[in-house]
Structure formats: structure tokens, C-alpha cells
Length: 405
Image (cartoon, rainbow, N blue to C red; front, side):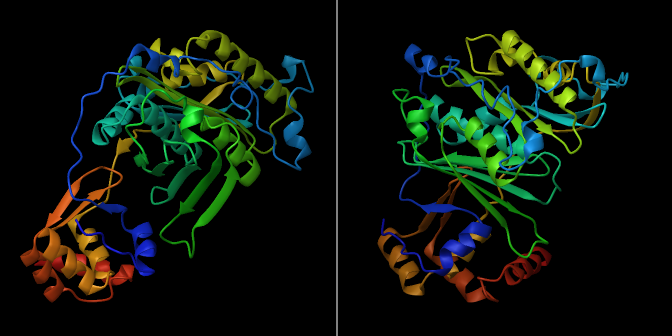
């Protein structure tokens, strides 16, 4: 199939519309059974305690370094709270869930997520092997944790731009818990560890909202390659959020058996005593998880739910539930957005592809859905098209007009 050459306008519109790759064939779904050696990459509990069980410190903020200045736990404010947790229960993590709570004194926020079902759905969409699934799972977990509490319309995009054979991983979530993502090489074999698959490069975050004049962009370097620790460094260095962050997955063959993580954030006016108590609770969490799987995958395999893990972390500090979100796979790609992208290309290039291939065929990088447009339909759409395809308002107006017909 002839390749479509992009113009300077195409990258801009693809950022806001949808990421589509022009292809000549559908990629077949292949059943893959990972050998036993695949599990060794996901069952090692590396020397990864720092950043997962201790707080990332904010550069230049002396207060964020005062973690263990007091051993007198009697000074910790532990207002008696017996919250009604019935609405937050999720037995054996049957459902995907993001649960958040704060300590009784308002000094710490804890967010815990489980997304096993979501990750399995993403892996099926992309015919993904465990290495890619581990990377996409951790990236999605980190995105859901770091973006918890933002407005429903707000978007959080996390990109691990590494030079490893995985060729990068991208995860996008919004305030509703809707998520999508992909990695550059979803079928990468289990011969690589996650760190080798990611390689060296940068952690890039984009936040946006329909009402913002421009998106927020942040970037830091990849230092570990296991995603969650790198995102923790990003939050501390780029967003000045002192936190402890962990995300992990486990697999049986190509089936994800657990996927989850937690984020503990230090809020303004958090006392050193509260911080000290929290780090002791984090130490207990490590002991409970064991060394077979990365934290907190083993706990989730044992049936510990987000509420259970939050209760362990906030033990002795009081727990006040904030909210819960049910993460879901969601992609906004459509045939209309594909045609909008075609209108941004030189017409002769589109005609050349139709003449050579007999159709336009494209695959969404996020959900792998394939769209096909025949010559007659393309010509008809060009004849009926109105407005400037580079302007969002014109595209939205065209969709409204089409819906009322």
C-alpha cells in the first residue's frame, strides 16, 4: 500500500483527534502462551523499595525531607473514625476500582487502584505479550493514580519515551477513569526485562482541559526503567508532589492475574509524626507483600482490595474515604475523525492511495480498531465536506449537522 506523506498540519490535528496508523493489512490475533521464563521477569522483587515505600522529596523543599524527625507516635493525630465502607467494598478485586482516602488529620492522601480487567482487555486489543502488558499496565496504573481527583473533562497523558526494543509506551486517562494506551512493540518477547524493554529516555506528561488555553507539559529523565519509580521522580521533580508510588502486575501466560498500585501523597501541613507513622505502615505493607512479586501485586493476588490496602497504609492515622472511580477502556476514534485526517493531506496523495490500493485503511493505535473507506465513499465525503478541518469548532459543527440529518 502506498504510504501517505504527512504535512505540517497532520501531527497537530492527530494530537487532538486520534492517533491512526495507515496499514495495508489487519494484524492477526495470535494466541501466545508465555514460557515459564517469562514469569521470572515479573516475579523478581528488585531493590525497588526506595520511592515505593519511602517518600520522594521535593527539590528545594526542606519540609518534604523531614520524614522521621519524631518517634513519638502519641503525637500523631488519630481521630477515631469508623467510616462506612460498604459502598467501596470489592471482594477479591473482581471489579476494577480506584479508591482514595485521606488521613484523619488531613495530612496524607492515599489512592489505590486495581485494573486487572482493564489490562486484560487492552492486551487482547493489541495482541500483547506480557512484557508489553506489564509496561502498559504500570503506565495506566500510574496515570490513574497521579490524576485522581482531577475534573472529569481533564486529560492526563503519560509517555515513556525510551530507546529500548519496546519502542515506548503511552497511556491516556481522564477524570472519569476512562483509559486507553499502547506500546510501540506489543509483541516483544519475554527475553527482555521491563527495564531492558524500556531503555533510557524521558518521562513525558501532558495535562489538558477543554477550557485551558494551552496544555501543561512536564518532562524528566528515565532513571530506572520500571515506570512507577520513574513517574514518582517526575511527580517530585516536575510537579513538586512528595509521594510514595508503586505499581505492579503479574501474569500467568498471557493472562493478567493482578494489576494495581498505590500513591501516598504528603499534603500541606502534614506533620513529621504523621509522615513517620506512614513510613512504618509502608514497611508493614512490604512485609505483607513478600518478595515473590513486586509491590503490591502479591497482596492483590491474595485478595487484598484497594480499601484493604488503604486501611493498612492509614492504620493508626484514621481514614476518611474520598471517592472511588471505576476505570474503563475508552477510545474516541471514529470514521469521521479518520476522514478529517484525510482532508488535511494533499488531495493528490489521497487519490494516489485510492488508485493504488483501491481503498483507505487505517488502524487506531489505541484500540486497534480498523477503518476502511472505499473510493466512492471518499469522493462523496469530499464533495459534502464543509468548513476548515484544522479547526475543532468546524469539525464539531459538521458532526452536529450530520447527527441532525
